Length: 131
Image (cartoon, rainbow, N blue to C red; front, side):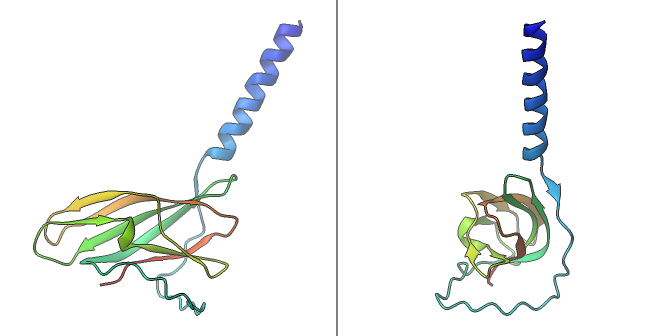
C-alpha cells in the first residue's frame, strides 16, 4: 500500500512539473504597436541583412521566454543569422539577447526559427533586428 502511494505521489509530481515546463503561445501583439521605453545604454542588435517579418511569443509557468521568429534574408547571397542580430524587448523595458543560435539562409530566403530568450518574470513584447 505504501509503495502505491509513493508511486502515485511520484506520478502526480511528474505531471505537475511537465505542465509547468510546457510552452504555450502568449497573446498575439500587433507588429505595428509603438513602444517607447528608453534605451539609455543604447543596446542594439548588430547590423545584418535580416528583417524580422513576424514573431510568435511563447512562455511557460517557470518563466522561460521563447519566440518563433520569421526572418527574411534581404541579401541575394547566402547569410547566417545569429544571436547578435536579434533582441527582445521585455515588459519592464529591458532588452535581452537570445541564447546562442545560428541559422543559415539562402539569398532572399524566408525562414522561421525558434529562439530561446532565457527566463524572465517579464513577458516579451517585441522581437526585432537592425538592417
